[in-house]
Image (cartoon, rainbow, N blue to C red; front, side, top):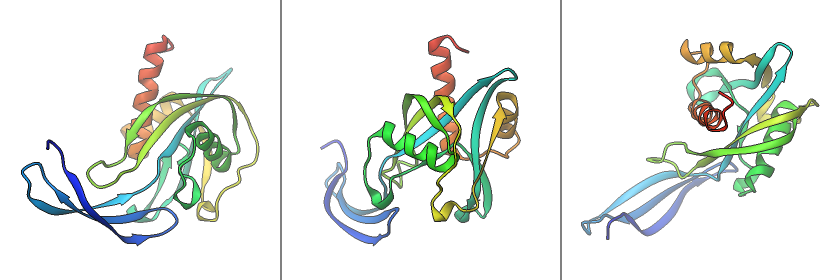
Length: 187
């Protein structure tokens, strides 16, 4: 055995967005222990990108994030209600429209990110959305304080440098976007 194996599992807590599990595990040396973690479905993170006469721009959303007690700028992202797993492209299109009102003509998958693999099962799939059409957002009740805005590349990257944009998923998504740009020759 070269990995940790589950012996048993129990749900300690569950709501519409997450499940807290506590598993009895067997380690590679045969000893048993307990591993608690947050179990969540895969989420989609969308990088809305538009090119105008003024240049390239990206749309971010801002909302209050209760656990850290502050407002946070980030790329649109989320999971399906009720902890349901959805097709990545379908989920990305849903989150984009829900949070920003945008509809993408093209949705390109960039890769996957793991949120906190030491304490959560959640993975995210990152997309860049282009050929955008504007519309009205259809936000969930929990997103009533959300707002969205367009930012140029330089302004957005400055927000990352000076600590105004700190969302880890957004930063990881941005890294995948830059790799995609480099591999397609658009850098």
